[in-house]
Image (cartoon, rainbow, N blue to C red):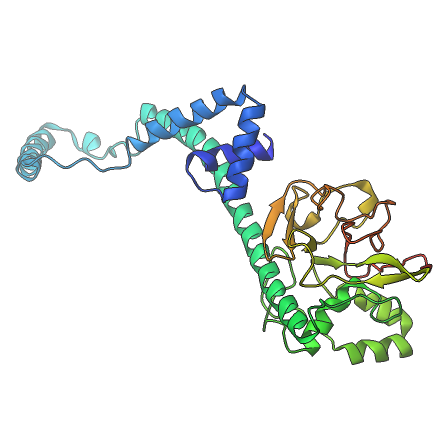
Length: 332
């Protein structure tokens, strides 16, 4: 069963977010054969809904029950006097009739086959929404940082230690803008797990222990990726630029981290490689099933030259994991 087929139950129960709802509707238009699957699920839910209300007991149920108890007590008393002692010692049969057990087993198989994938889908959706909430909190910090720096978001530099994408977190932290206890894990774990370093601490570590610095920077931004900026030629010299508040609202600025081997083209591992949450300058955080969600539909984890490096222009989005650098080959 594909991830999109698992969404069909949530589609019928109206338990999907608007973006996933649109994806399912598009999928159904492109795969008309799935309409039969949808109708089967709908019929199953209709049958299950017949049992959702408990029937009202008969008005004379109490009197009929008492009368039946009295009748059975008399029969039992009369029968016990005629039975032999050895017969009276036989234990009554316990448990459900075999037919009832078969019916219960079939119901468990049918309902379980529908409910388990649906519950898994709901759990996955909750994880996606939790990570989107993290990205929105980071967006608020980024815009507050821009307000303090003439509209400029934190810029990843050419020279260390600010030459790695993960430095965005210490830069926000030094400005007092990082949300207290914000988990940098996706899916989120316990708040406050990440101990955020200051920029000065990282500068000292880079100078005193370069190997220790390289080990540390791989987790600075946790499970998220940040923009590596873009190149632009000024006066016959290539310069590195970061993004600003005034740039296109549809430009991606952060996302779930890419696969460790980004060249393989796989989605982020944060949500089982099914896709990635992407945060845009305008503040939207959406889940995308593909990496091709840049302004021109390009890969958000590679530039036009298929490198994890600064973009070739403003619209060439490249989001790098914590240790990614705008110029990994040392050239500019």
